[in-house]
Image (tube, rainbow, N blue to C red; front, side):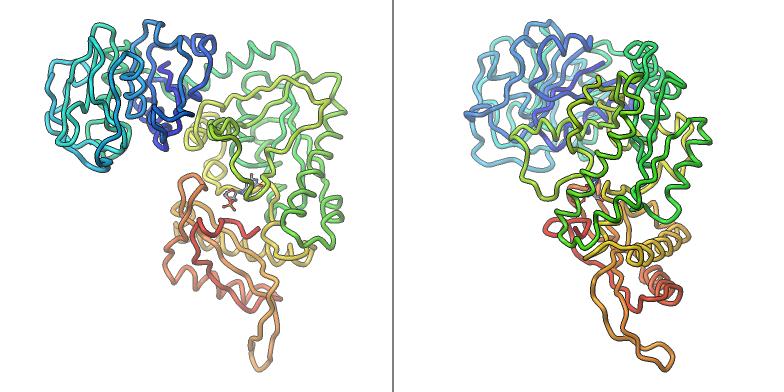
Amino acid sequence: PIVVLDFGSQYTQLIARKLRESGVYTEVVPYREDLEAIKARKPKGIILSGGPASVYAEDAYHPDEGIWDLGLPILGICYGMQLIAQHFGGEVVPADHHEYGKARLHITKPDSPIFKDVPDNSIVWMSHGDRVEKLPEGFETIAVSDNSPHAAIADENRQIYAFQFHPEVHHSVEGVKMLKNFAKYICGAESTWNMGSFAKEKIEEIRKQVGDKKVLCGVSGGVDSSVVAALLHEAIGDQLIAVFVDTGLLRKNEAQQVQDMFKQLGIDLITVDASEKFLSRLKGVTDPERKRKIIGETFIEVFDEEAKKHADEVSFLAQGTLYTDVIESVSVKGPSKTIKSHHNVGGLPEWMTFELVEPLREIFKDEVRKLGLELGLPKHMIGRHPFPGPGLAIRVMGEVNEEALRLLRDSDEIMQEELRASGYYDKVWQAFTVLLNVSSVGVMGDNRTYDNTVCVRMVESVDGMTATFAYVPHDILENISRRIINEIDGINRVVYDISSKPPATIEWE
Ligand code: XMP
């Protein structure tokens, strides 16, 4: 593969995605990955990503020094360029003014392989504070822009290239071509990769790792854990022990749907119905963090109990960890402040010292979806909106009980039906209803009512980190509102949440 060292730029994932989309297998790893681990990946070339820091900052991020002596082609982007300049003895200075936005790239060395078939004066996207002032020995400038006398530099003998701009972002018109050129002409990487070959590789890897041992895999019905289970099933068949905990906090008919899907895939699923346990522990609890804590602990307890039954046979635990989780848990500045305690990153009991199988560690959510399709998971499950681990409990304001869950499930079902019917389900990132503990006065027929309020929440987002409320046509909202109020006994008012994240969050608790 091409290995991308991630120095924390918000665009790093785009480098990998663009290259993979053009058929070049690319892995992203945290910048501090050690040399042996990098070598074990057998890279054909290394890309150093951008990053928010300055190479001169005291806590600047540096890669394992050994990477410079591997003799591999290197491409540095933005911060990566400054690392290169610094390492090889050039000079990096803070720019007089930060350069953001579009610039025209004038290529001064058109016969460089990195610019093959790239027209002169194409638009590239700049976003940087520092810039290279003096080139290191052996380097030459291969492109300039109005504000950057060294927009691209190279030492073609050592096959080291560096860009001040971001080729990976959409606004850099010829950027993908430059990345591809680096992979193809400079690293000699093949461009035959696709999700099918990824699946095959992973299946082989899993077989090698696991041998004839058994693997325990918790499934939630969500995309990631389902894809992991399907992949494991392909790889090791009945050596997979898949466990599904029904928390009683799922959407309407969801538990059944999960079981049906696994049946279709030919996977034996052990379902543990723990809904009573969850509900009884949530009785009287209204504080959001306590709810989350109780659910997290109860989940571990139930899963643990089931796992113990298989403890003698099982040696591995499979998890649907994605690259985004990897990078968050090794977060460069240490764990960020707890806004909400997330459910699926809770610790496992100590006795569960299984070795982990994490086949999705290198890929991103949209790629997991493609992989799922490749493995034959149904389309509607692949396209499902995210659903939080604590489930409907964090969408009931106040105490969680059967009645509240009924109102929430029924309203959520109507909302989903209307969204799907209008074709908007796939246009919003996430949509759900929230049961507020607010009663209000209404009038139905000649009678006064005093009933519950449901809030409809629909957001647009890329990764859930930030979000804006969705612009959904009013007639869709109208249908949702009318049906909820008419069809569900106990609700007489529907409101739409028009807050964005930040400062609000997507979920209400
Ligand atoms: P917030 O509410 O923090 O949510 O803006 C961001 C995204 O994360 C989901 N979410 C969770 N997912 N376990 C999960 O697996 C959790 O505990 C959890 N809490 C929130 C939320 O649905 C949204 O997609």
